[in-house]
Length: 515
Image 1: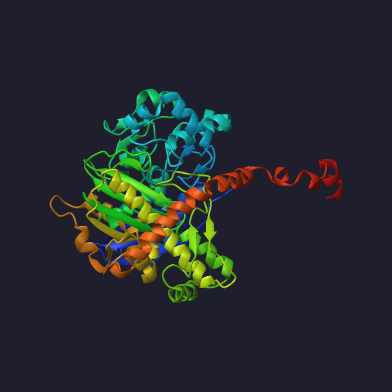
Image 2: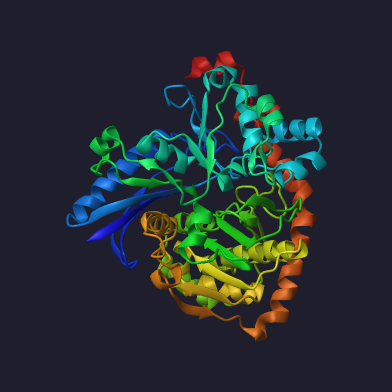
C-alpha cells in the first residue's frame, strides 16, 4: 500500500498522518507539547522538540501501518517563526513564535521610523506588526547580540524539518513573505539592501514554492526516522496555508477559516492587496496572493475556561447551548493574549462586560464562542473593505468538530461555511502536497476527490439584526476600554516587585534574610 506522510508542527501539538493514494487516512499520531512563556508577551519554543517529535511521530506511524510504503514526505508548521541557527545548524536561542509573541514592539517602531511605512508597504506588502519576522530578528540583535553574532541560518518549523531530512537550506515564498520587511513581494525574492542591514551574516535560504521538492531523505535521517533513504521530501509552508490546501480553499475567491488554538483567516486572490489592518503575503503557489488575518486566541480561550471551571467540553457546550444567543447579556473581548488583526494591538486584553451574580459557566462559555465569532466578522469586514473578493468560505481545524461553534460563527458573520469530510488540518494538506509532488505527469490527485465537502452551515437569518447590534457593541467596547486596558498591560510587563505598592515592598536584604 503506497502512502504519503504528512507532519505538522503546531502551537500546542505536532500531528502526523499516513494517507493512501485515494486520500484515505491510514494512521494518525498526535504529540502534545507546550510553548514557553518566560515573560509577558514572549512565546517561544525549543526547536529541537520539532525534530524529536517528527522522529517519534514517523516511527509511530510506521509501526501502526507496517505494510505502508511511504513514497513521499510532506512537512508543515506554525509560523512565521524565527529560528536562528549557527553554521552547524545548532539553534542559537529558542525559536520566537509568530504574532502571539509581542516582544518586538520597540523594533517595529524603530524599523518603521528608519525605513518609512510607505517603503515597507511597497516592498513587503504589509506594515510591520507582531506577525512580522524582521523585527523579531532585530530584537535578537538588540537584546541578545552574542546569539546574533553566532547566527548563520534562518529556519521555520517546516524548513527546519526539511533541513534535518534532506540537508537542503530552503524556505518557501509564502513563509519568506512574512519575514517582513526583508522580502520583496512583487519581485518574489529577498530584498538585498534590507537583508544586509537587518539580517547581517545570516545566509539567505534558497526560495521555492510549497509542494516543490526540497530533496531526498539522507542516510542519517533515515536511521533516525525509519524512512527509506532517497524518499522525496517537499518544501513545506506555514500551517494555515497548508490547512487551506487540505480543504481545497486555495483558489481565487476562497477564504479558509481555521479553528485552532488561534483563529486564522486566509483569502486568496491574484492581486496584491495592501491594508495596514491585515497581512499581505505571497500565496502558497506561484501566481497567487493572500490577505490574511488571525485572532490571538480562540481554542486557547475555550481551553482556559475549561481549565478554570473544571468542566469538560461536552458539559460546557451543553450549557452554552442552553444560554442562547447573546449569553444572557454577556459580551467578551477575546484579547486574552493581545490581538493581531484587524486591531493590531499587542496591549489589548480580555474584557468580560455585563457580568452579574446570576451568570453561569455556560453563559461565559457561550460569550467566549461569540467573541471569537465577532472577531472573525471584524476580520472579514476589514478584508472586504480592502478589496478582497470572498466568494466561498471553507472551515477547517479541530474546532469544526463542535457544531455549535460553527453555527455561532455563521450566525454572527452571516456567512455560509462549507465543512469538508476531513478537517484534521495541515498534516493532511502536507501529505496531499507530497502526493502531488511524486505523481507522474497528468496523474496528480485532486483535493476535491481526496476531501469532498460534506456539510454546509447556513446562518440563521432571524438573528441577523440581533448580531448587528452585538457587533456594534463589540467594536465600541474595545474603543471605550482600551485606554484603561493599555495601562494594565503596561503594569503586567513590569517585574513583580515593581508592581507592588511601595509601602508593601521590603528591602532586598530583609527578603533575603527572611528566606
